[in-house]
Length: 238
Image (cartoon, rainbow, N blue to C red; front, side):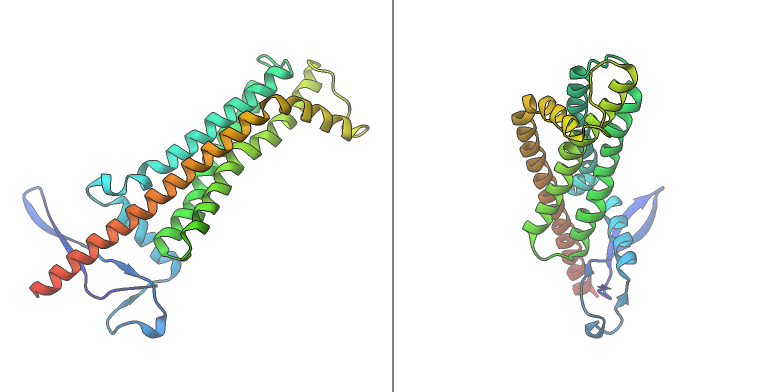
């Protein structure tokens, strides 16, 4: 990655003192093709720089997907996890048994992981322009969202529920060591009533992930366009 050598100067006033805040539009290129005077950044440095520009950008509405998108995606995963875990707990007649120990790994953990993985695998890709295929990025975002919001809790919730049900003797279950097929049959029996609901949730999660990803890309290019425009205006005044 390299940064254009002409900076964009943004004038603002703070405590009645005029100050210049320097921001530069990042351009991806081969090191050998860098223009004279350009600043070379590693991928890590470029990522940190881009996020610093985005999170310090005014007005905030231009970059709202980066401020609130992770919370939206994480909240959607949490709601899905609550529904799935609640279904298995009710079917296994757990009542209040082990409530905290089941909700923490099935609801809280996916919420955090959804935000972290989306930022690392999707947002970082957008701001570094690593993948030229927008559909590929959206599919990646969809896979992460559906994975953490539907697939992960659908697999972990019954495992945690089966362990608690066996411990508290709230539901008759075959021993996994003696009858693994029987355990799988119970899982299939419990998940079958909500199969269509899970499919609908997966579709909804996919649409939300695609929408947030699209808004992130749109926001990023809007910021880049403004930086380039201000760079050209500054260059013309010099």
